[in-house]
Length: 210
Length: 210
View 1 (tube, one colour):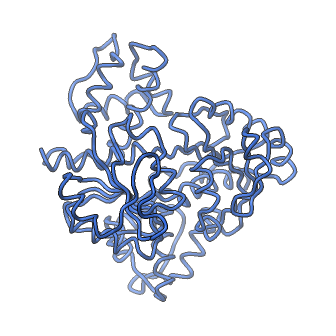
View 2 (cartoon, chains in turn yellow, purple):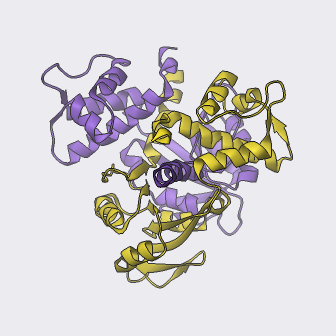
């Protein structure tokens, strides 16, 4: 499949371009250029053009990009020109923060169901989403044809939860648990590693001090 | 400076190798190989060796790596062989989740102070950390010689908070606000973009469905 051969750093930068374009749109800008996008993201205009060229021809030489048009095109590429239903597993502090996070929906994602094992949490509601018992997971995923899940459980149970999600038909997992997960072919896992983010900072700050 | 010229994807993978090695250590493994590290991270053993070669000579041909030794070496490279004091700005849902997140300290980072503007939050304590008013920020950063900050405030105030942090002497910012931040030369910013993480999933899942 052609799209599967896009290098992952290119795909990641596509999201960053989209975020920057959305920012420009809210500021009222109607046009931009690869140079301006590059400046905002501390890269080169050649890199911006090369990244976009993976997906076709955008903008016009000497004119640049229409912000609204390019936003639409990038959303189409990233498949966020539709609303994705997403489930959350694990309604601890982080899970609650995610349920209340307002930017997901604006970007094409809606957390529509949450699951936990804790009897005290089951039946309660966070940001309008009812917390359900784990035994309902497979049913909800199947009936609502949900493909994406966010995992915010303790690391020692994250693999078990992921196995359950994959059996239920989930094809993409965003993992916040600090452990690497394995999934069958055809399932994409993204790891949000907060310690790794801080390590990138300590490396640079430490290097500058040495 | 030599370390500043390391490509950022290499540096990112260094954190992922470290996480995997820590996982192996907790499971009691004493040795590993570039092949095993590569398998766990869905890359190639040549990539693992090439990444590590940026920083020196590790392991022995035919023998592999001693897990504990390589953990120590990677922590030394990433400067997490010391404990970094980190401050948090913004004690909303996400901020509270971060203060309660247990894996930071294990990885060399300690959230030691938290700041917010809300009168109801100031003076309260989350996970043993007292929430302070913003006006104390500069003083705390200076006196405790803090270099790293986590920003978990609404997007419209994130740049103002970052300006304040930079003036106070912060050199590394981990930003959770869904907006891109600018900082003077010498300050490193990392953006945690949760929507972008989900977009990477929607792209792959959507592509598989097309």
